[in-house]
Length: 490
Ligand code: FAD
Ligand code: SF4
Image (cartoon, rainbow, N blue to C red; front, side, top):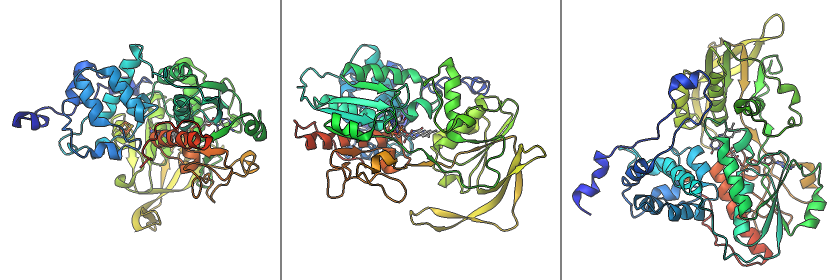
């Protein structure tokens, strides 16, 4: 390679796809923020890859995508081959290209990071969107049916990834979900400005074309009992997610105008775009689904993760006059993606770091009037290495608010219908897998699990990695011809 080619990245800057102008976003546009690369843009970014001997991007990517290899195929305009290569490691590549926190994963590890990382996620989205739009589909012609059938509980990323890999191994996957649409949190948690719901509809079409069967609107443990499921199928995969809501136990959290984050986001996704994804209310949340009008209101969001970022940016689009995010640590320790924080700031969101909520305050008619917060400083690291937020005495103040959204996160919970089948969980509700058994196999040998239900609330791409690798364990346990095994998730 000539000196000019080696150093071409110095002349070719990193570019992202165009974004919807901020004026439109702040006046209620819910469209996907980032547009799409065209062929020239994608080839330009792909051409910046140095093809490092040891691609850190691939290692940092939880599904270990063959990134330099598919970037090379993009340069050569071999898009269908690139799409097949993307799918060889990642059953949902167009979704991950959109929602992965690339700054912490592949792009954060790109050798060019200091000069501007290759725009890996946007190229992944370009490859798969283009190939699917041109009619390309995963090729399963050589797959021999094994006669085995596996039930998958949960049509979120973990369940869908597992279904994809089982179908490729000739095992018939039947995916159950309590909702009428597939996608799990992709469908009803992550807002459309991060992930257009048409992407999920296209993926459903692809999976059905591969032979995946969906039984939607069916809740296991209510409509079908676990014994029935275990009797009917050769194995079961649990991709049931993490839905136990962390409320923080704040005094005043039951006041009018205080909302839990997920029902708030769910209700928006039901309203926005005129689509009602499920057609029935979510059990237990009916009372919270009648949302207050945010137009002209002061909204305070408590929590600095991805969910908090989605709430603040949704509130902006719903016409809130002032949106504030209060987080108890500093910006460097915020769990949300730095890119999403930057987008939120651009949309006018105010961030208050080192503020810990103490209580939510009521006015005369029991309506919320604000949140009492105390300033914090960072103390000693906790067991996981994160520095604790230590309140500074005497620094309390009132953050005025008409609406408060609580976004402290979620954890899994083992339902009774699973514990009755011998499936075990840790004290914090995570389904226990592996140990002396196969990876992702539970204490009931016929039952496997992965995604948020096992890891706790995490990422789409880690759920995909676990669903994919659990399928390899299921295939091994069933004793049918092994699917190509992937490297375990990082
Ligand atoms: P889920 O997506 O939760 O899917 C579980 C499915 O199981 C659901 O559809 C549920 O209905 C179904 N189910 C559960 N129990 C039953 C039952 N008994 N019978 C039938 N069906 C059942 N990650 C990112 O990488 N990027 C982001 O930008 C991002 N943003 C997020 C924003 C929000 C608001 C939230 C809440 C999460 C976000 N995440 C993000 C995290 C990501 O969405 C999850 O980590 C991922 O969806 C987990 O996948 P899963 O398949 O394990 O579970
Ligand atoms: Fe990056 Fe996520 Fe794609 Fe991996 S799956 S290359 S981390 S965008």
